[in-house]
Length: 124
Image (cartoon, rainbow, N blue to C red; front, side):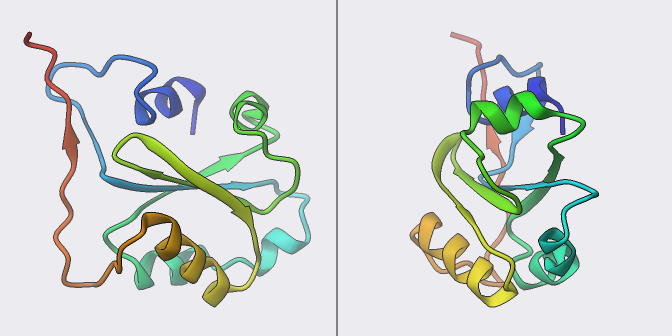
């Protein structure tokens, strides 16, 4: 994930015509050298909460976004809902990650909930 994409997700950069931002986003901060990051199972997280868009940010490839978000340890997760940062946390246990994500979204996310992207239209 690149910084310009991140800034669009939080409303700090304009969207292109027809471009939309998912309503529920989780950014997973990681690094290839991080031992604890290897215990995080992204495929299980995605399968458990398919209405969430999961993005990976390797801090060695994009340290600006991690610094901007105040990430001090990895693995860390940043939760964004409707272009607003809801919170961040560090964890490696799948159940803990899922519980914290659901808590920060302040709603139960289920397999049957439709994915509704947030569309920004600047035709004002």
